[in-house]
Structures are given as structure tokens and as C-alpha cells.
Length: 383
Image 1 (cartoon, rainbow, N blue to C red):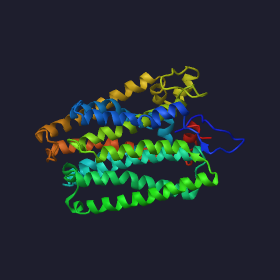
Image 2: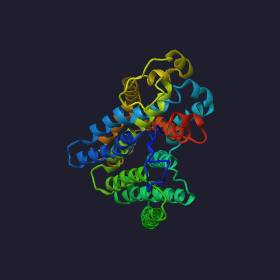
Image 3: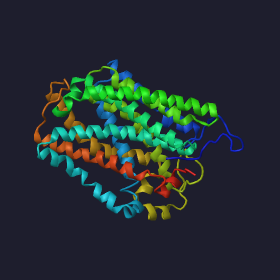
Image 4: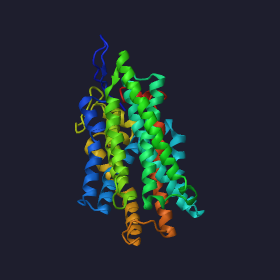
């Protein structure tokens, strides 16, 4: 998750630290500024300019599923990774069985509830991951700051999500009955925690400025992009909100991840010097050696067009059936979006297709550990 860094000056300390993952322009466009895609989709939807079903289906097939493929491009399609992480990769395929098994045992509601929670946790975890990279790049690793940053993300992202569930009848209907009575209390707890932690966190930033510790500007910009967007989207009333917010919140996550994957996957090409821009063509030097080492991952990452094409084909295979089944279920609810009991076979199929997302969530929690995996730090140019 990193590239060449822009450093203010090593000769004298600076009040502002500006070390980036790739570089200032790329980071500001893709890791921070791409939050504009969520705001754009949000405004288009609440103004009635984009219908729900086409919005979600096109986003899922053309943007979201390809970002899942991005994970697969650097794991299952990487010959070296298949050899080094064989147990992790092949064992992860068991996620395809989890959903159908729970549906078969009559626990479909619990399964889909847990799936939704994991999906949101995955979004928050990515924001945390980018924050950690900026902390590492900028030497912002004091234990007190690490603790406060984690607490801030925990409370500031989880409060609006729980408040949304408490306020939206369609969302509450997706919560297992035994848990529904505690949702409002949890929302109040998280709101109080957000206020308290937020005040302490701001006080710590002021203290850092007073004592002359560098202020981690990229981290601040990332948090300023991600946190308000989640609050605005999750706390704004809109029709069929549990369905719509999936696309609106996640498109920012998708674009961040696509850029990170494309940056990381330059290790599969001979373009190892400098920082390739998103559309830059990769040279062909040592292609045979790279193909022998990495297998299909080299072909996928050889050109941006290849990566996009493979991702869309995967999107049609994965999200095409899933969106069709969701459309059928939506129509059976009379277009209200209200929770209905889909046919048993439909539940089985949708729960099976969740396996792709689960594998993505799980592998993502394992493959970006810079300190534990030196090859990742090297690919992301963390040093």
C-alpha cells in the first residue's frame, strides 16, 4: 500500500508531515478525493436522478466485483502466493459453504445479518488500514496516538451505522428479534463515546502542535474525507436505505482499493522504477521471467485495460446472478424494499454467492500486513 514518498525535509523538523503512500497527487485523487464518488452517488439518488436497481446493479458488476477480483489477482492468480499461502487460500474456499449450511439449518436471518455486519466492518477496516499506512509513513506511532486513533475510528464509524439501524424500519427488520431491543441503547453509548473520544483526540492534536511534534496531514485528510461521509449518508433519510447505502458507502472504498491494488501489482511487471500513473503502459522487459514466477497475475497486471476487462468478466460471473436474484426478491416485495422471505433455493444461491465477498474480507485481513510480510512492504515501497 505505498509508493515513493514526498518528505518535507530530513534536515530540519517540520510542523507538518506530508509523506504519502504513492505521491501527493495520486493520494489526493484516489485515496482521499475519491470520497467525491460517494457524495455524487448519494446526491444523484436522493434527488431521484438515479433509480435504485440500476444504480446498485451497475455499481456491483462494474466497480465492486472487480475490486474483489483485485484481491484474487494478487492471491489465487499469483503462482508464488499460491505456493506460499496454500493453506490460507484453499482453506478460505470453505466460506462458500457457510451460507448455504446456515440457510439449510434455518438460520438464514442470522447469516444475512452477520454478513451485513462483516461487510460494514470491512469498510471501516480499510479506512483503518490506510490510516495505519499514513501513520507509518509519517512516523506517527506513539502509543497514545495509536490508541486514540483506533478509538476514534471505532466510535466515529460505528455510531452512525447503529443509529441508522435504530431509525430505519427496513434495517431493523433485518436484525434478529432478540437483539432489536438493545439497538437504541447501543447507539446512545456509541454517540457518547464518539463525543468523549473526539474531544480527547482533538486535545491530543493540539498538544502535539504545542510541543512541536509533526502533524500527520495525510491522516487528517483521510479522516476528514471518510468520517463525515459516513455520518451524512447513514443519517440522511432516503427510500430503500438498506439497499441504497451499500453502493453509496462502498464506491469510495472500491476506488481506493483499485488504486492500491494497481500500485501493488506493479511488482508483477518490469516497471519497477518510479511510480506508474494509473493509465501508464507497462514495459515488456523480463516478461518471460515474470510470467514464470507469478503466472496469470503478470498477465492481469500487464496493462490497465487487462485488469479492467478481467474484473468486469468476474463481475458478470459473480454479481450478475446475485443482482438478478436481488431484483427478483425486490419485485416480490412489491418494490417496497421491505424484508420478505425469499424462496429457499434463492436464499441458498444468494448465501453461496456471499462466499466471494467473505473470501475477499478474510484474505484482505491477512495479505496487507506490512510488518509480517516484507514482500508487501517492498511492493508498497514502505521504506
